[in-house]
Length: 172
Image 1 (cartoon, rainbow, N blue to C red):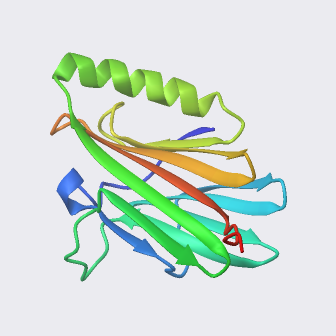
Image 2: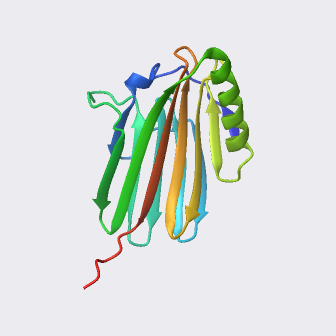
Image 3: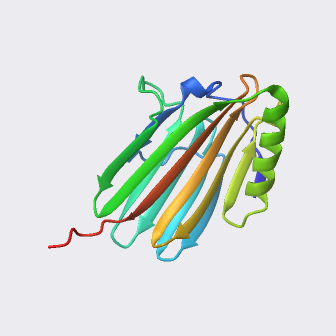
């Protein structure tokens, strides 16, 4: 699903992004509700980037990657944590691209996500290449999602990848 977000950027550079686990739902500009097996997932586009809410019979968790007021922590390259009965893995990277490469990559990503039944993309006013996009799936018993945050003024693309699944008990 592709939508135009009726708001200005709240996070105007990749360096403004922060990561948080377990935050309450923030006001969303667009949402997509999904059922992936027993998991209920809500993809949320914020004026300040994204939030994912995950709920399963054994619990819930939320991931927020956004410009978070009062947060001085930068976006981590990787996180691996236990959240209740779940294993949570997060990875992020920032790509800096030339103007031509950036425009091509932006078009590819928007086409991929907007045509996917589990995809949500929002374009910010002022540039067709200023967007946040999210794509979710279930694979091998785990819920996965990827996100892309585009900053055409800097030629930067922030890509994140998250996996959440039940913890496997250690063998005796």
